[in-house]
Length: 326
Image (cartoon, rainbow, N blue to C red):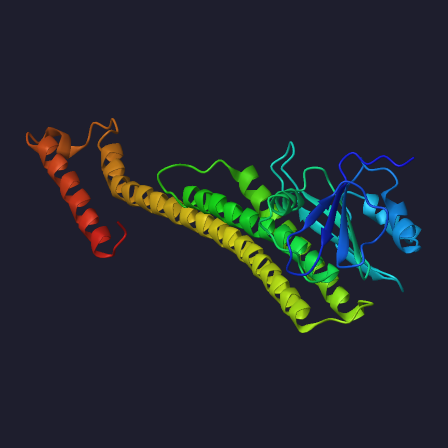
C-alpha cells in the first residue's frame, strides 16, 4: 500500500485553470498531469510512472533524487528527461548560504517533482495554483521551466539581500573613524559569493545539457523561456563574481588606507624627533658638570640658550613644512 502524506496532483490543460485532484487512476484524455512529492515523506512515489505509463524509472535516477544536496545535473532516457536543479534552501544554524536539490522527471504527459518540504519556490507556486492565480502552461516542459523560474527568482532575491549586507560591511570596512572587527563575517561573505557563482555555473551547465540532449523536440516558446532562465542565472552568477571582486578590492583599499595612516603617524613622529634632537643635544651639553664652562658664568646665559633652542625649533618646523612633511 502506497502512502502519500504531502503529494499534490494537478491536471493541467493548456490555457485553462488547473484542477487539483484527490486521486488519480490513469492519465486523463486531455492535457497532462503534475505529481509533486516531498522528499522523505511520500513512499513509493517512483512507482507512479509504471502505474500510469507502464514505464520504469532508472534506479540510479531514483537514488539521485533522494540526495537532498545533489549538484545540478541532467540525464536522458528513451522515455523521459531527468533534471536535478539546486535551489536556495532556508538558512540553517550557520550564516553560510545553503542549497538543496529538486528532481524533475519529465515524460511527454507526466511531470514528477521531488523536493524538500520547505522548498520556497514550490510552496509559493502550489499556493498560486491552488488559488487559481496561474493558468496551465502548455506542456510538461513549459511547466518545468515555470518551476525553475521560481527557483531562480529566489536566488535573485537572495543575491540582492546578500549585496545589501555586504555593502554595509564594506562601508564599515572603509570607515576611518572606527576599527573594523567583522573579519569572519566578511570572509564568510566572500565564500558565499563564490558558492553562489559555482552553483550558477552548475545550473547553467545542466540547462545547456537539457537543451542539447533532451529526448523531446523543443518549440520556439520553450527555447525562449529557457533562454530567459539562463540569462537570469548568468545575471546572478556575474553579480556574485562582482561581489567577490568588490570584497577583495575593499579589503585592499582598507589595508592601503591603514598603511597610509600609519605612514602619516610615523612621519609626524619623525618630524618631532628631528626637531627635539638638536635641543636634546644642547640640553645634554650644558647639563655636564665641568668647572671650566665659561657660558655658565654669563648672567644671561640661561635665557640666551632658551632663545637659541626655540629659534632652532622654529627653523626646523618651517623647513619641514616647506618640504610638505606635515
